[in-house]
Length: 107
Image (cartoon, rainbow, N blue to C red; front, side, top):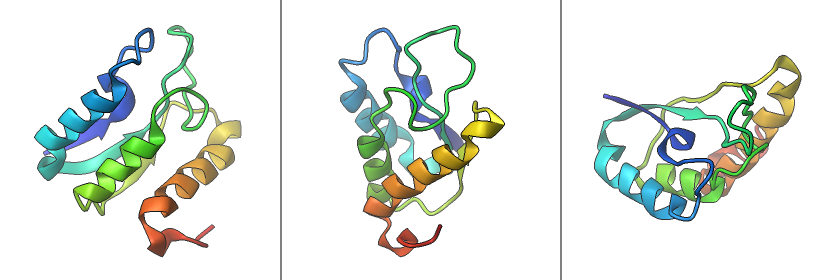
């Protein structure tokens, strides 16, 4: 089985192919996903804190692809500081709710 993390599929220095890389990753691995990680792509490769919503990952595509494969498992936020938890969680919920209507209003 697979744990997927969209930020690990692309190089932070060249995001030009991010959409197609994510599409291909989900095409190849989607049926085997058991857990989804949600961290972001930082502009600074030395930066350790990559809370969802603070960088350059294409979250619209990421969560759309989760819905396309009918993923219904956990989404784990990581690589974030304690003071980033609330904003990162709100960010992830907002974007997930676009594709998972059942999540709307579950703050």
